[in-house]
Every structure is written in structure tokens, then in C-alpha cells.
Length: 525
Picture 1 (cartoon, rainbow, N blue to C red):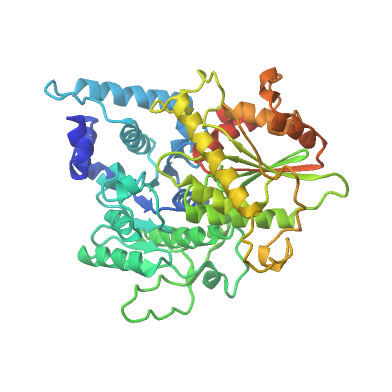
Picture 2: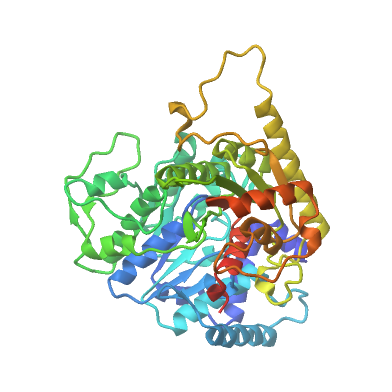
């Protein structure tokens, strides 16, 4: 029964409607939520965050459903940008649980929806009871068969940049993935997307035409800035400009559909080329929109934390294209950094990757950052993390995740060996730090530039990286065995004496969440 339901995506969607009915709601009830439905491969969470913050700047009461969470499950359901309180979460959790228990069918062995479905149902109940003016709903995976796609009449839909991810579920080509994402289109409901490669864009266009969904292509943010001040974004990184451009179109369309007058004055419209998607309007962002973009916060995505001699760079990039964007952001941020007058500068990579992702490809993209140390650990905050089930993955064992870390370390060592043994037939390479390396300032190669370590949990990794020098992260002394390794021992001296330490945490949003939990205890309150 369970396997059959999982095997047929359409059955999954029908099952979700039944769960909704058993919880006391009909799909028609969701129309009241004035939903903005957003999918994509990269940047969908950031686009949702921009969109929600813009509309909140208009004084609207917002609901926001996103995934995954970084530290606590309550982060997935937000009212006015804030995770719902423990009390509200507990109240709605048990209310929904008891209702589903009371309505279960004895002939069925599946009385409860799975984790993500349950939280999706719960979000709908919370938003309706809290009487939000609108709800920004982020798709979990894909679109067509995602359980959020029981939404019948969103106000507007958005598709962010597409890439290769979740291939086991969505398909192994951009076209197959685009077909899945285009599944959120609804007849007569305006939809917007950002520039995409030709083939997936053609799939989105055909998908929209088949059901009479008006689909528009977003002009770049630069077009909206012309003739006005440059827009300041609360999220760092060049790639966030594409997400902000989409968010502005989604927010403006929502405001227009709902009869708001102050939705941005149109500039000269640009003609669309024959056979191509019509361009979304070029307009002057209003002061409310500018304020919303400026004040957007979205932890764990191009996030910087400065702590004494340590600077933490946190980004949950986990696809090749998002990792390229992350590397670009990290290197540009380093380039802007003030060099220490004296003392050394150390760069540390803290990495993990899960699921069916190609970790070798991700690590190869990180090579140009010239890390002194690469640290690998599972997405486990602490070895005895009984205090927070929100951050545990019950589907894998510790042995499995540590073996995965060993694979990452082997990939990293292999990449370094390839880099260190140039092709004898090749011409001499450019000087390190030359103009083609985007860089930074030249980073002198260290004798330990290939050094890598594996730790059994995030806490142990952070204890070694910080060496007690992070003013907030001050755990008890690490077990002596933690340093019983030549690299750990010599590296500890280097880290203790460094004038500045730059730490990039990436490869997995769950890893970033575990790091944030330890670096910022207030997130667990």
C-alpha cells in the first residue's frame, strides 16, 4: 500500500487531497489564502523570502511556508517573517494529529501522512486560522506532483533558475525537470520565470500554452533600476539579483490582482521577439518594494558572520550551478576583505553532501578557493544530539554518513594530486593569482594545502576550527582524542596563530543549519 502510493505520483496528489479533507478542509478553502506558489532548482527559498518581505512592507499580514528548516522545524511555517511560536506549533500539531487519527479508515494501513505532507497540511491550517492576507508557498521537490500542488487557484506562480537536482525523482535532464516544475502552472493564473537555457524554457512555454497559463519572462534587475537609484539587496551574491527580479514581478502582479494602486509605475515596455515568451513589464520599484528588498533576511544563504579573528561564510549550495554562484560570492567577499597587516590568513572549507548529489563535481568547483584545510563531517550537530530531533535524519546510520565523509575526503585528495601534478606536455601556466583567477589577492601555497580531516560531528569540527577563538562558540574542552592526529595537531597551531581565519561552510543546507545552531544559540530558543 505504502509502496504503491509512493510509486504513482498522481496517486500521491490524490492522497494529499484526501488527507486535506480528513483534516477538515477542502481544496476550495485554500483559495482564501491568496497564494503565491514558487518552484525552481536554485534560489526558490531566497525568491520566496524577497517576495514575502516586499509584501510585508505594504503592511500585509504574510504567511510563508518553506523547506528545509535550518535549526528548528517551526522555521518552516512563518507569520510576518517569524517562525510560529512553540505554543502555536504544539497547538496546531496536536489538533491536526487528533483529527487525522479520528478520521482514519480501518481498511487502510496509512492513517498518517508523511513528514512533509503533515507539515504542509499544518501550514494551511495555521495560515487560515491566523487570517493571513497572503501565503507564499515554496514547493518541496519538483512541482507537478509535489504535495503543495493541491493548490487550485494561486494568485500568481513563479519559477526560479533551473538546474539538475533530485534526478531520481524529477528526471536526469533539464527538460524533464522543467516539465515537473511547470506542473504548478494553472489555467488563467499569471506565471513568471527568469532567463533559462533554450530547451527547458521551451518546455515551460509549451506547458503554459497547453493550459492557457500566461507565462512571462522577467527582465533583469538592471532594467528596473534604470532611471532610479540602484536597488540594495539584503542577501549577498550576484545571483540574488535574478531572484530579486522575479520577486518584484510576483509581488507587483499580486498587488495588481488584488486591486492595489501603489504597484510601481510602468516604464517604456520592451517588445518581445516573435516566438519567444512575452517580457514581464519594466516598472519603477516603489519605496515599499525597495525597503522590502533591502531588509530581506534568509539565513544560511550567502550569509556572513564575523566573530573576532574568524569570518564564517555560510551557504547551503548543493548543486553544481549553485556551487558556482557560492564560489563566486566567497571569492568576491574575500577580495573585499582587508588583509591583515601582520600574521597569516587561513582558509578552511567545512563540507558535506548528501543524497544523490555528485560531491566530486562540487568539490572540484571549490578547488580554486585555495583552502589550507578541508574538513568533512556529517550533518550531525553533536554526537549525543538527543536534545534536538529536528536536526536528526533517522533514515541513515552514523557508519553510512561517516563513510560518505571518507568518500568526500578521497575525492578532495585526488583533486589535489591532479592539481599538484601538471601535464608534462602542457605549456607553463600563468603566475598564481594572475588576472584570470578572478582573485582575490595572491594566496601563497602552504605545504599543508591538501590537508584534510574528518570529524564525527559538527561540534567537534567547529572546536578544531575555532581553537577557542570564537567569542560565542565556547564549548567544553574537546576530548583529547580529537587532536590525536598529525594534521589536527599541526593545524591547531596554525589556526591559533592566524591573524584571520575564513571558513566557508557549504554543500548542504542541513550542515549549514547544524553550524548555525552551534554558532548562534538564540536560533534554538
